[in-house]
Length: 448
Image 1 (cartoon, rainbow, N blue to C red):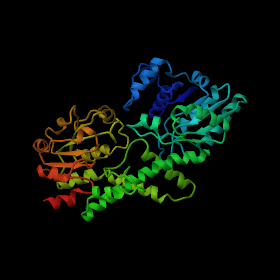
Image 2: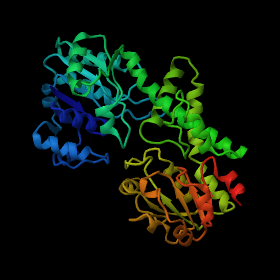
Image 3: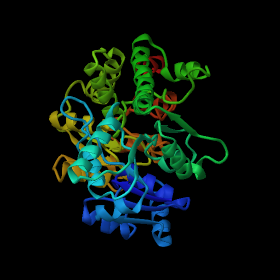
Image 4: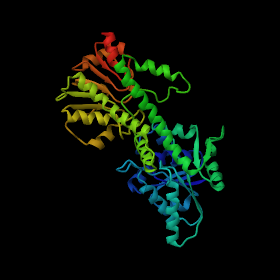
């Protein structure tokens, strides 16, 4: 098929690369000419395992290309994917201006029937707004052209997006058109051969499915963090509790790992946007608001534990930080717990020495050059002259550590583990003061 994708951000790049990789001809459109030039040279602006290899391969085969020429792109594809950003507005609702701009662009240049596919994460009712926008623009042109708008939300995890697109559990499509169903089946046929992953439903249900899925996963994270905080007060070990409840197949082990809060481009804004939608229709979203509140509080846990370890005096201290990205296998620092921690440390007069395998440049882009931030080239370099270590991201490179070396390197033997990477007994035996999530305080006392 000939497919057009508007947007060469995270979703657009993964979608375009994967569809080209199974034989479709794909054009990705972006307004940033420098970005388009770089992508046509095989330079990928984001870190996503496997993505650069697929993009370079399909550029070489000619099945994938990038352009700023919207008119050419609209003419090219029957399927017109909208995969642009929907950032949160001031009130938490999703900002649809970019989605509607693309809808107007498609309507301005189309000369024949098109299927417009909402791939961006959008509130319920967006397909209707896109349809109205296209119809209005066509009317202004005096053109009478048929078109359809459908919803096809993405379910991609950063760090595993290629796997999720290629081997995901489901492909959700919202439409009431047989013509759309036929085209979408052809589009996704290479990914749906072993068993039919396509789930067709009405448009509004498809739009809600995306938000409901992310809200459910965010709820599991906030739930286990709430229980972890309770475990510390009650003298229980959250890791034992996690194994205990995760063994129940109705609950499962996925997304019940305690930590320092979720971040990224999806969960925070999607929970907020769904809550805002609920308010707009007069339904108080009590659970969603609790999920967000717990997560915001959880991001303060690392600073609180660090402040407690130093009796409230962090001024002049140097803190080593392992991990800047909100999760492993990405360089994304949007809503990352590391940002909450660093900003609190700077406000308290402390310095930060940070290392992350991928997010160094992103951190530099966000915060620039500053005297109280050093970005280190190696994990152990961040420990030099540091008063304590805080772990924010569960990169594999942080899982195996020589605790004796760690104790010798740190001016104060303090480790704040925001991802529960280590066994408290092993760390304690090395003479380190270890604070984890939902297990540190009670186990410190038990092991003393």
